[in-house]
Amino acid sequence: MTAKILTFSSHGDTTLLEYDPATADMDEVNRVIAEYEAKTGAQPFDMATGERIEKITNEEREVLMVHPIAGG
Amino acid sequence: MFPGVLSLIPFLTQTRWRFVFTDMGWRWLVGEIDVPRPRQNGLLGQCLHILDPAGSALVAGEVENRVDGAEPIGQEYRTQNYLRRIVALTGATQMGNAYDLTVGKTRFHVRYRYVRRLRDLTDPQGAYEETCFYPAKKEMPKCEQIATALLQLRNNPALFDRWAAQSGAFKADGQAFRPRALIHFR
Image (tube, rainbow over all chains, first blue to last red):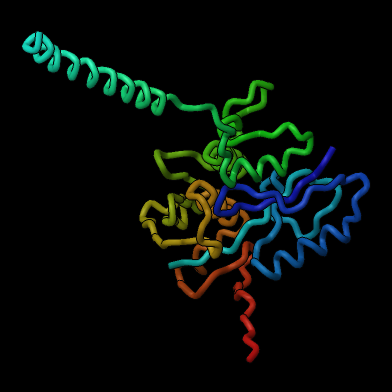
């Protein structure tokens, strides 16, 4: 069983990270996500519930990084 | 005998030209036959080849027509599929090319780059407010822009006011997002 972190991009969905939640170092996963958020502003949402999540655990199987929106 | 030879000259000339044109015709015909060549996969094909771990190269045209029972994985199909999933997750309903999303007493009507809000569904005098939105990551497909707005509004309905204020981009949690400044070294 693998878990993946993906985002929407110019060519549809793009997988940023794929890992085995049973063995992966979740601190490392969260560090990568924090770096991605700092760079792009995208925040993680659990694709099983549609809820924003503060920290990724080994429970989530599919996490979507949702990019910021501006008004105009 | 000499007039007889003269009468043969037009006949021989015509026969010779027929051979010349016939020969050219064959060459043209050969030119029109498409000689089998190795398939030019382009960039997409090359990428898929690199990504395929089993070494059985997938090429662009074959992605849509896999015979192993897998669903088609074209970009448009996938973006629509994500939108459908997010519509279901957020409890939104499709209304033509727009989506109605109810969060508490508030109803949002979301379509590509526009969102309307009816603040209180129970208020018979209530009027719709409207604002535009666009993702900070500008080159996102339409379906995914709508999906992004639905997810964010469902989690944080107050984002509508931020967008309406037109004061930059906001993260899903409502924090302002300022891309890191570029530092130029001389």
